[in-house]
Amino acid sequence: MANLIPFKGVLYDPAAVGKIADVVAPPYDVIDGDFQRALHARHPNNVIRLELGQDEPTDGPSRNRYTRAAAYLQDWLKQGALRRDGEAAVYPYQIEYQPPAGEPGAGARVLRGFLATVELAEFGTGHIYPHENTRSAAKADRFQLLEACRTNFSPIFSLFSDPDGGALRLIDRSVNADHPRFDFRDDDGFRHRLWAITDRRVLQDLVATLQAKPLFIADGHHRYETALTYRKLRRQQAGLPPSGGLQAYDRVLMLLASLEDPGLTVLPTHRLLTTPLPGLPEITARLRDAFLIEEFSFQSPTEPETRRRFLHQLRAQGQTGHAFGLALRGLDTYLLLSLRPNQPVLSSASARDRLDVSILHSHVLGTLCTKADEDALIYTKDDHEALDLVRRGTATAALVLNPTKVSEVRAVATAGERMPHKSTYFFPKPLTGLVMNVMED
Image 1 (cartoon, rainbow, N blue to C red):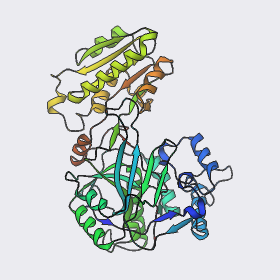
Image 2 (image 1 turned 180 degrees about the vertical axis):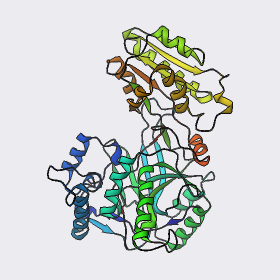
Image 3 (image 1 turned 30 degrees about the horizontal axis):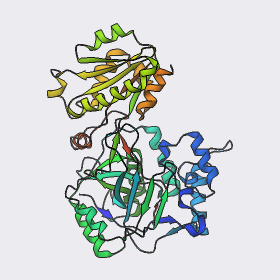
Image 4 (image 1 turned 90 degrees about the vertical axis):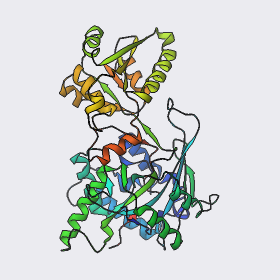
């Protein structure tokens, strides 16, 4: 199913650029304007100049951040800041990290996976499954960058089922754990380690292991769909049929990790409203037919402890049912909404409609506000930020969710459905610029 292809990665040369931590970056879609400027200032070879360059007042069709990225890439390759490996490889990658506060389980976790290129496959063929909808503006931006640079600077994060751990055991036996190629900590203190496997027999075994497994895109839907569009265009320009005769643009860089990996964390994406809402009596009247409502009241000195109990109960309820937290501006009470067991959605709905985020939009947001209000939602993955914004009066309400389960992502994807916008936040994110796929035509 998944056609894994070892490749000659392009990596930074520490002898030329110094600390690898100074030249890599998080994924472009989690970088705000301030952090973008900080990364530009951090190092002249930081990958931000390639992945998310700054606009300039004189930009136009022939000179812009995409053409500058292409020029930087070629210059850095010539100067030796970036070097292409001499042998095709797969790159094992581990991220040791601390989950955000409030997540179940304590202590550090380790996400284990490997970087490789994978042959592109259209959705619906049973090879690669999406789970989220995409937006045209983001795809247009990524297409211009791909067309200018012909490079994947960051990997698409994909998952495969490996319940017996066979793929990762194969990798573990093939690397010297004590001698990674890169070993450093990022701005959050997360430890990143990278190795390279070039042994042909090991690579053949890994390719064979993945051939029987479909892939589920966790993160990077926009970039994957962009790669499909780019492949179609290049094949048309070359007068080639839609498939056959594998070309450089027929594959894309991926980080592959196991669905069963205990080091994989999925965070919820909470919703914040800034538009007026009715008072508490009206809200409870509208929701009580569908939800059991439990109140967690507090006075200011007791708010931290009440918040802790509220979030703990929300997580506990989410293990066996559908539960949401609701905080309202000016109200010293947190509301725990538990879906009543007699609701039709629990038995007759599709995998998509049974998701917490779908039930939230249909049974809570759809009841409390208009479609226009929903379109103006603010999002955050941080429990405490969501509640603090309401306490400070920045938002009128916070709707706090439990994380989507990985099994639910798989069920929606294999059913051919797409989740609502901002349904999942896979954590931690693989870094941009650690290994690049610069296409060789």
